[in-house]
Image (cartoon, rainbow, N blue to C red; front, side, top):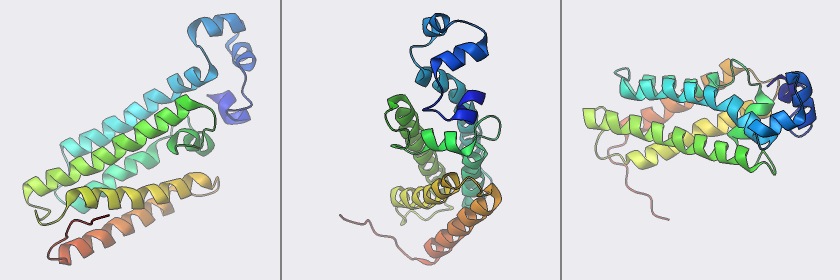
Length: 193
């Protein structure tokens, strides 16, 4: 991961990886078809840990939907706290950012879909408990919450000097605002295209 961090993904070569690993390029190719595969193997454990934390929140959320969503979405800001820096997070967090490296775009898309599903599942759990009125459209709520979060998350990733805490604070404010509005809205109808 250090080479990717120091030199960026495009500039990191299989030869450089082999040199740091103290082995030959052929040996690296014996285990990995490409540097995309190596990067994938480096990031998947961290992504899986993030999803494990997020899934545990969905399985056993705090009593308040706003608090639960805030905890859930904070998990994604913790992604990268161990080994990945923001430029690398951007490469697999935003579909299309990885350029020609399809495997990273696949990871970005899978991560995006999974995160949206977790937001939806959390909202459905609260609706089943009666904490979110049945008159509210959970699918649309999930889309709005995730879109608001994702916009702030991408802004955070796009600026190397941006700090995590203010970004999380902004996401939390948006969630609070959305739920304040939804709690005072008697009925949210389905939007039609």
